[in-house]
Amino acid sequence: MTVVGIDACKKGWVVVALGDRGQVAHFIPTIDRIISVVADVSTIAVDIPIGLPEQGRRDADQLARDFVGPRRSSVFAVPVREALMTEDFAEANRISAVLSGSGLSKQSHALREKILEVDAWLTRAPRPVFEVHPEVSFRRMVGVPIEYSKKSWAGMTLRRRALKKVGINVDDIADHAGENAGVDDLLDAAVAAWSADRIERGVAESLPLRAKGYSASAGQTIWF
Image (cartoon, rainbow, N blue to C red; front, side):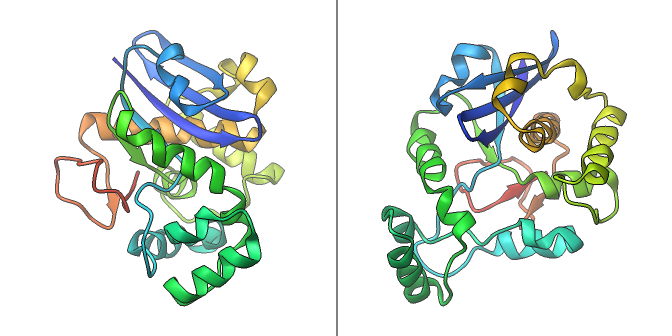
């Protein structure tokens, strides 16, 4: 069987698959195409919120910010569901303030289509789907808080080296997927695949802490 990590990119989704046939990256325009490129997938980890709050904020997001430390700004508070239903940012911000007590970032609202795409797909996903956050996974992989942004040369180099140490060489798998995804997108999909493998092997951790058994359906949990 094969595990996959998925990250959103401008044109769609970049997928990194790890399995008996080695490592490979794919580009898919919509997330429901995953089976068309990885038919034997057993566990799916995706860098997108799963479990949208109806009001308030998710504990997982605050715990993730605390865990990553210097990169805490990379973990945005997941918007309440109703705020994502409107394309108008000002209206979404107003709704967020009413239902969660604070506004939302433009970054989180810009991801609304991707978030809603995954939200709609979950009920028909072919395998269990787990939410991951790349900065949380990299923090766990490296063992210490990471100071450098993944968009900087130092940050990109550090993350590539960390992946290589655990046997994931992104230089060998980019290919066509690399033409449709940014450097950070491919790195994020690769570390999501690493987390998917940890989930598959029963050694993953979570924020908040969940009992072993790995129920993906509950949502509002970040796995790594």
